[in-house]
Image (cartoon, rainbow, N blue to C red; front, side, top):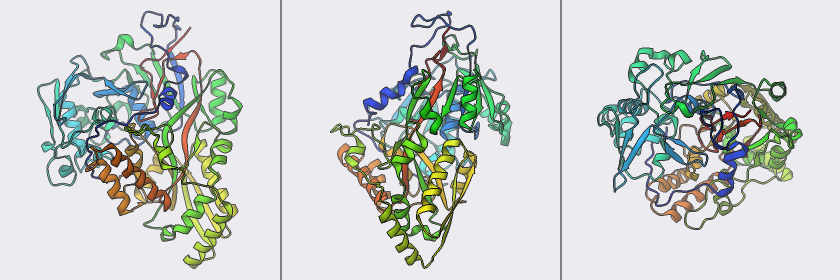
Length: 556
């Protein structure tokens, strides 16, 4: 697991205008009030309940164990931390009534709202944050995002077993004041406060539930605008019910949100057209057929999907010519535009366009980086034959693992087909599994090649590039290049105060990884939705939690 120190940024990297505008989407209307009329003068429907289709099951109810965007998004509806993201992906106060930052940027003092409660009736206090953060760095917890806490005093030493969790640089100054001491200033620290691992946990409840904590809605507490109900830990349907005890309940209009896991596009479409869904996810040919539909919405993500290789257990994948052949034979334009047809874009590198700009020059990171990924079938075949000769084999058999939703199946089948059809003697055995299982297989090394992805939780290129660091939790290969590791660490520490050098560190790290095809980026993701035009106020984020329904409402 990566143990990193995050340095100060003199100027925070910002989202470019294009992506920021996209995040508002077609549903970024004004929020509703509880008076029977929305704030833009539209009448509210009598029934303020909606049904939404999603692609994946919930993986956990424990904020410290979440490792996928889908579950992170679910938690965003029924949990609340110090900050949350607004419609432009910027952090705004949630439970934090007041935030005081010391002049040197090393001390954060959060004064909490005193009327926030858990769904068991207990108040949300500073002690809940102290408990959760100490658990996050406790090696026994094995929290996948523990490395994100290493800017906090003593966190790295605790994670490494050199100190105890109660020595973490956090303190409850009374019941409603939470103080954090940092090793170095972190300009995007408040943005991290909107991410689930930094949320509070009620110690009494967690310890009472023991190993069952977070395994069902009955063993999970809520403190957000909605309450999680109807989840037994494995089922594919659950609900968010309005939390009448939420501190801002009077401004929450939706009464309930019913969630269904739907992995087949045709099923989602049929449910939408029959009124059984207010929000359905489409892809492939069906998505292309609905471009002109009034409910059609395209939502970009700051995420790149790619192929990862098992370098530890499958030595042949360390052959650079074989990996480059695999990359060259894949037509990313065809994959994104013809196979997926959902607004996803062909990858030319790992970091997408319209994500971050240089704080000094204003240049887009992707423009400065240039294109690394090309399509050349003939060169691919030549390199493949050379690779087989170097490996001393005439046949190669590789297992490929992918998620079991329809989009992932399309991608997996495309990759399987292009590789097998163009390379003599190659067999690709494709297995589709639920996303939770794919993540487990990736982290345990139970794969040859795996189709995964990495989405940003902060508007900073390092947040995507971190996946290339050999010590990062989700670098499943693991891919390891000491120079890449050093460049990324320099960008986060010694050069963190020099935006131009830091920028070049990140460009160089990405360039090295892509030159040797450490991963093979395929496409930058987007989703096509059919969303009920009467459903307004849904906030869509390109980073971290994808959706926020606290301002949503149904018009008459």
